[in-house]
Image: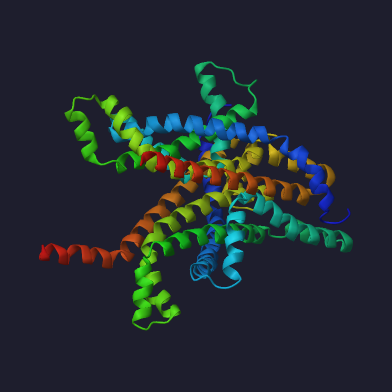
Length: 244
Length: 228
């Protein structure tokens, strides 16, 4: 079989329609991951009772499990009980057309929360202890200190890593084809199932993922520079330069 | 079909699944080995800005970092035979494992090259200049002055990369390799008790990645102590 670029184009045009599914599979987990991951990281930073020791054990343990395993376990836990019920009540059609996209989103979200909580923890660690002390000394509460001083400072540190995390999630979301979710990967393969041009289909999928990842990288660089603005302003009019 | 989860089966499946551990280990070792060698090559090509190689490596690293590992696995699996067929090497008799090893090696090379490059650039420029000033050649400078210093900065990141590679071996079964996950799937499809197999896998993955992390943290401490 000789490589034919025509089939790459065919696969590409089919797969492009499934970009929203891939974005849903990576952006929703990112969003949930930032919210819950930050909450976990803050709890660990402030040593909140019961939550912090629990997270200290659970996060490193959960970090060791690969994404595929989360997906399979979630697929089994959500799908199998439902499947048994369906066999009992003969709902075969409902099962066949059930959208497994949600299972994928749930599995990737759990993975994302674990990963991003580690990102946020190291970002919070990067803010010096003196900052907290300074906040408390001027009478800010713990919440005010976090919201007004600590988080704005840790954001520029976290953003590039979050960008890497998002790229990891976009790439990782391609495993959902294993549980027959229609994302970019599976969309590209639908044409290959008819004409048996698998290599061309995978190359088409690769180009789409590459494009999405390059775009993400660029957007996060722009965002990073935006949050760094006030730092750059300080650099520009550096007081020390004038003093020395 | 009986119950969803039976704890006795976890113990029953454990020996069967861990008996395929050597395949996972082989993939990790080959991937890291190939990755280090090829990665160093790519990093040097980019550092010294060798005309065509520099641009090629930029595109290569960007492609590997921007596409999922599964896609790369399948592109190698379907594309490599075509490529080698052009040269006249027949690979139809090759085992699938070789393609997996090639794919993981190529994948790791891109990430390793980034690690090596950032480590080398973290060594101060003065070190290069000092080495050249005492008459060392470019290669001598690299081997005797720069790489030993870069090694220390690269080591923690390298450790993380090894753990990540170990976790990413969980995708090799998509090509039909009978590694730990492939074994668990085979058991699952035979007995309809998939969850027990996944629990065994989770335990093995957690244990091994934690042990690897501990080893690297310990080694890092020793390295820093030796330096002082």
